Amino acid sequence: MTSKKTSEQALRSRIADEMADSLDEELEMEIDDHRLDQYQVERSDHPKSNAIDRRVYFAELLRLQGELLKLQDWVQHKKQKVVVIFEGRDAAGKGGVIKRITQRLNPRICRVAALPAPDERERTQWYFQRYVAHLPAGGEIVLFDRSWYNRAGVERVMGFCSEAECEEFFRSVPEFERMLVRSGITLIKYWFSITDHVQQFRFTMRIEDPLKQWKLSPMDVQSRSRWEQYTKAKEAMLEHTHIPEARWWIVEADDKKKARLNCISHLLTQIPYKTIPRKTVKLPPRVRNPDYLRGPVPEDMYVPERY
Image (tube, rainbow, N blue to C red; front, side, top):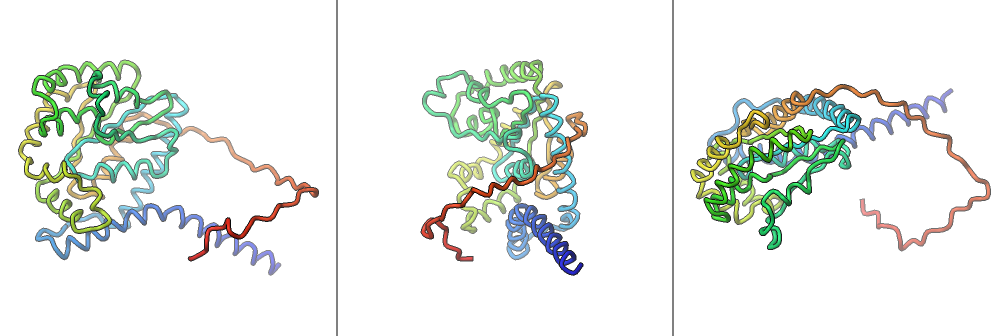
């Protein structure tokens, strides 16, 4: 009896360790937010006054991620095609919410498209051509971390396209997106909105934090001096491309945690998913062959155990 009890306790301990380990990824990402909070208290003249409680944040995030898993099962089962576009100023938190959406999903079903600057060949193509290649097949979700709206934003402000090309883009986008919707794609567009001083703070954090410096590109630096130009470009973009078939949704993103929860909860309301029953999985018994002998592994093939 004692041996059985000890075995059960050991099993419970292993299960607890495994569950804790499954949460570590979010906790590791949370370290960044915690360091940011500490830095803001020390350095900012405007510390956060009504930040969401961390326990509430984690509880809601895990609940929403559970719903995302149900959404994933439904999309796969029904062979639906879903595209979600994330746009916004640099440092608005688009990457953070994308990480939380994909964190527990199957990367074969939900994938991220984050395209680099076009090469010489791509510059001669139909503008939408390189984005079309990343659109989903049935049973897939694609999250665009920036999208064809680069033309209405950074390309226009930084002079990478002419005004004539931008005007043609505004004429083409509504028809392009209506065509996607008619083809059976669910298209959802989010703009992450932050204030001037919040972007200034986040950029400063990136400059002074060695773990975040890679996030700050020369283009990001230039965007600070062109805040008003980006504002005008955003307003023109929303005016021309906010259509009934594919409307824009604005996410207030000064508070990263609230923005993540608000965006994910809203995303779940945009798709009429239902719980898909899963078949019970039963592991077959381990087959043991008495003639099998495991060969030796040379010691120099093992990774040194330094921890």
